[in-house]
Length: 250
Image (cartoon, rainbow, N blue to C red; front, top):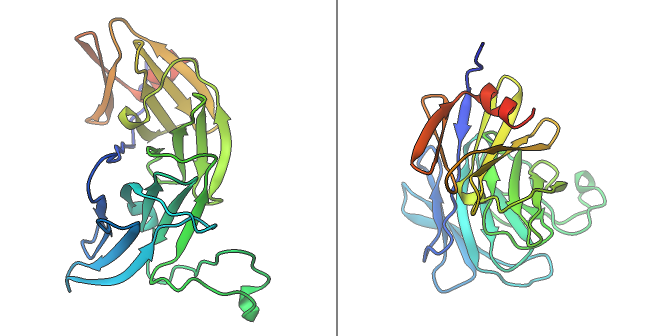
């Protein structure tokens, strides 16, 4: 049996109750931090130790929100901000030369017929169906998966900044305990179930949903040495990506 080497494995667990959610850029230059006691974000120049911008946390209608979590998206050279109280997420792009962002209706920004945001970095609003406090992102941060109140999984595309798929699953997949990776066939997401010895597996090429049934209790997942480690009921096993795909019915 020929195995497929896992090229990249990436997992995200967002803070849900930190007093001051924050994240630092991969180059160490910038820090994005929640402003304590206020619905605001601070952009900090780490080397200078100065705040270069402060952004009030409100949606398009001006409704304020607390911050559920902040993380960096290294492939996009940006930060992702999850908002606790409104149906938006934000992407703040720190990459030099990033295109300006515009709120509201835009007729033709090239002709000066729109008002650009006045933030130091472009702020791209991601429209959600409901507030989300946890996401599992693909390694390239092109997509993220969140669990909706009705139990379905919402797939959000960060390029178009909205939900593109709704996946129906049986059980209670745990977003914060999931992992994602890229193999020879594309991106895969794996989510343990909260109650059952099941791993929910999602093929991001066609957005197919499968499941791997185990024995014992709710499983734990992690990546190690290019393989996927699954533990359930005190028994653990390393899986190659193609093995997990086949077990899920792909």
